[in-house]
Length: 321
Image (cartoon, rainbow, N blue to C red):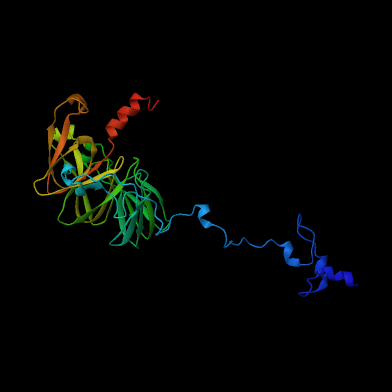
């Protein structure tokens, strides 16, 4: 029966194309099958494209409204060299990931700068030393062990008596307990870094970490306690901050003053001084009014937030209740 052809696709140009029902809501069939399928939108050559507000091209830059030029003599000179005071981030700029390699692995510092994560890839049998309690996740192939080494200095300092050892192959995710950033220190065998006891995060196998005693004056007022970590050897070490990390490079004989509770890591000499009270800096009883004067050459890393000040603020606003 000829009416059964409606169930099969007819050859092109066959008169039975009229039996195929159009899509719902389509106008009545006028003899051409293509009219039931809406064509893709096509640009109209006669349409004025500028009315759609397209982004300006290289030849159509928006006007620049410049302020009137000032004589060079009226422009104040900078009070100090800002090129050596910067956020301690990668070359990609603030907030960019910092990536690198070391003997037996690679690392990436991401999610900067207050929720920073350290991701480390370890080769077979490559060890890594990390601060206990900082491991977020790891590959099942990673070997995790803890070494208990009793030390009277560590006991008095109140620091952890254990160290977490991770051995590859695989991936390890580390993050500090404080909301802040992470920066990597490169040790070349000749340099020595001092790190706050709460700021050390991890180190490669070639880095030696020891506890260094401070003088009583520095211990009480420097904000770092009686002991700090001393890092020597060859390799990489990662330190964490509370808030963002600022890097300050000092030239030979250059002096720079940093608040005592904002220190993270340094490789140059410093002395403790008291500054004039009043204004932001108030009283000796709260350890304010005391600063650390660093002398170059060297580099100092310091943090934009103070754990002590934050704890006082939280307590004053009902924190912990």
